[in-house]
Image (cartoon, rainbow, N blue to C red; front, side, top):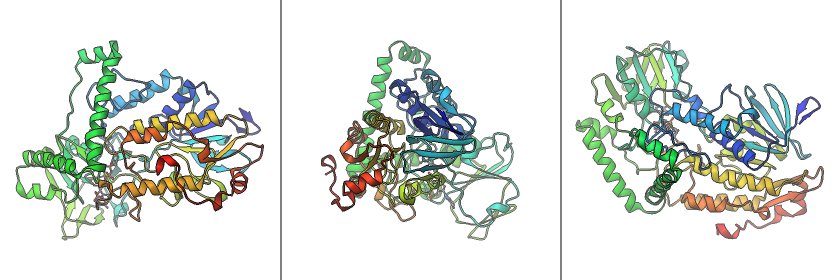
Length: 514
Ligand code: NAP
């Protein structure tokens, strides 16, 4: 697969996180060996490699947070710690023989469609070319640093939660944590016992749920090992409980949401006796609108003597600390930015260039329609994993990735002719994207809070608006009639699109989306 100065595999996957390793495993399982995975870092693991903050673990039950084709009987806890998940990803790569396909230290600077049937990639280590490109770069990969005035002048330790420096000694220091999302609720209880003072800067309180975190007893792990069907049953029960209760509450039934909210309010009342603190921790938006936060130790940590919850707005960061808009300057030795990720403005989007000067960034921002979170008009032979509107917020993201992998594998099977170029019809993608937005309107995710699920204009670019079973049904098969397909050497989807008169077609959704 080496041609001229460049490397020319049939398929290139960008990213060796969960999605990229899953893609590699499925490709190999299907007998497709002509691929490489380009990974910018020196190790695999994606978000589970990058997030090394104390207390980091998955808030989805471990039996569900694995690939169905690679069960793991060794989970130590009902919600796995980050190290165990990282090990798991590595074990999948080894078990399926994916590791030899990974090229580490390959930062993809640009991937450009060349209109002659290829993607041309410029990487930090040379040129690549392929027929099919699979983006597995992750939606929660790029830290979001807030634009707080003076942030660059802070004299102490400053780090983002997803770029934790394990060599930073925080013992006995005065530490600020900015943010109270999924990362912060794990960091705060882990830091509280070791630091002298901890100030938690909250802009919007989250809904914090009772957490069912337990050790998995050894006998159970052995049982899962010896009778894998038992673990499959437990996994199925967990999946359906979440699907029927949580998705129903978030997407269909307000009454169910109200019940859930009452239970969660009791958790707050039980754990925070001080009514003034409790009032400041009580959300004023519907449960589920932002990601819900399972934790049994976040509220107790906030009640400790060395912890202060700060709800005054941050005015600026000074070299010695944080100034709030009530004029108070708090002094710190370290600031932790638990401020989330760049999702709709993920910088990776600017590096992938399709036909007619279209850039993937347009699609991530919601300005180009996306079909099934996976394909886009103007991006022939390109598939994005964990793309727009494939988020769940209640179940395992791996389920959605697995659905997408089924779809991509079926597509690759059907597009196996050496010169095939396929691009989703703009009418199909447009109708699907409209349908997703229409259905989102009756979900909790458009009920009025601000979150990373929306872009800067308030359009929800993250969440799937229905049961994940519906997504699975839509992605079970690649339907070639949703695509313009060119088959002649040098033929591009452009010419095929023009020949099909697609630009004049009315925007009619395919039957299953109507
Ligand atoms: P996040 O949910 O986006 O939370 C960011 C926090 O920072 C919010 O509390 C936000 O306040 C606050 N913030 C942002 N800019 C600020 C500013 N200028 N001043 C003050 N506060 C500011 O980010 P995250 O906690 O890293 O979680 C992101 C996602 O990663 C999660 O939703 C989840 O999908 C994933 N995650 C998963 C796990 C897991 O266990 N599986 C763990 C961690 C993260 P506002 O709410 O007011 O915007």
